[in-house]
Length: 141
Image 1 (tube, helix red, strand yellow):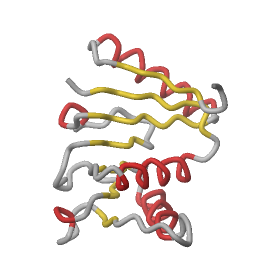
Image 2 (cartoon, helix red, strand yellow):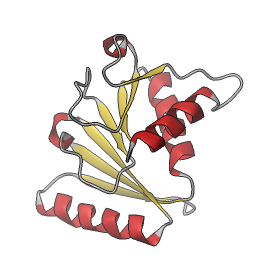
Image 3 (cartoon, one colour):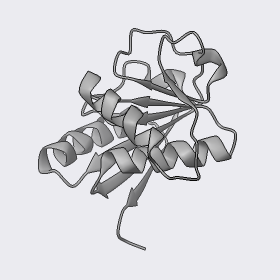
């Protein structure tokens, strides 16, 4: 069953997603980052290119001819084919349609109250479906 990890109180969702993608890539994991819309997907693409001067996180958009060979896929369109289903980083305020196809899902919830409220609703829904859940609050040890 899909394991779902909630990361809440995140001040910058894009930067956080980039760090998760870098960590996944370093551990040889494959990850899909689901953006809210095309603009956020483009901002994420730019952020991954400029993450750090010494880091490179190979990534392409979903549907790219090199997607099956690339460890990080960026998409906002869940209808596009995804070549791997190891990890999903959800930056949206919705439940991903393909949630159960992934071994692990990271729900990234910002400090914005509307985003937090949508995250709480997903948490309750996942709990009712008996998904294994963990919760990490940024800024707390």
